Image (cartoon, rainbow, N blue to C red; front, side):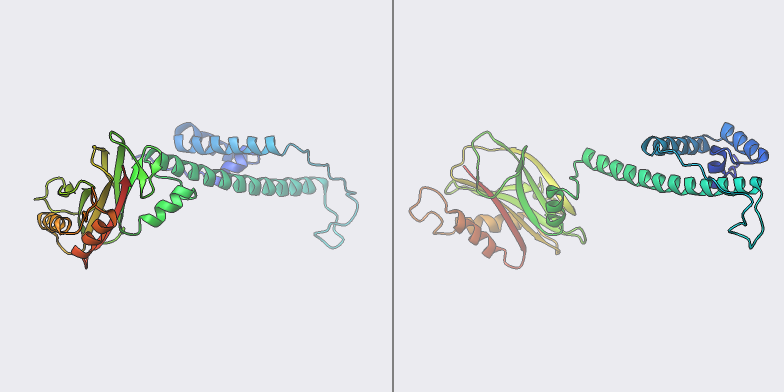
Length: 287
């Protein structure tokens, strides 16, 4: 088993500033030769020091003082030149250490934020400080269903055409377990609902927590509109029964009422009435 070296960050700083004793220098150099992690820390320290010197190149003015005058740290006791030099060196070292620690902290904090942001971007998660990220943070705390294109989320009623591609997304609260069924209703009179989730209506319709994409769909030539519904509950659901109930609701009289196609608002109210007591969310596009 490899032994961990006992080189502290303070000793590493003193070594870097050439203030370590000969014995301490030997200890640090021996550890640097055998410990890759310590070398990484030392290189980071050296890089931080170079950055400080680059940004703050102003020279430190020389301190002039009459060595014959009494010391400020002793009543009437003169301080010898060697003692003053060591004192000034110590105070300077302390100031440099404070600066190094401060800028190292800032560098590590900013680097950590950048790494988190890059990881989120790779995963397709928006920056929480951006407008989209704040919107996503709100939407992911509740049930919803919405439609996106390659340019982003679409507003309800957006006009699309046959052959256009859209992404269907649902969200649920991040805590708890829910079951749900997702289906589509279009404006064609007499047509049935189109099941979308679960893929097999005989499967258990367990919803994922948070935000979940159902994938991309290509629009067909159905007239007027395409409306998507999410029916969810904490209680177990049978997808077959949900689809059967939805078909019965839209087949009820009065949906066409002399119009060439179904009425969008009537479809919405019929579905909500059929599933009273459930979480019912919808989104739609027009064609």
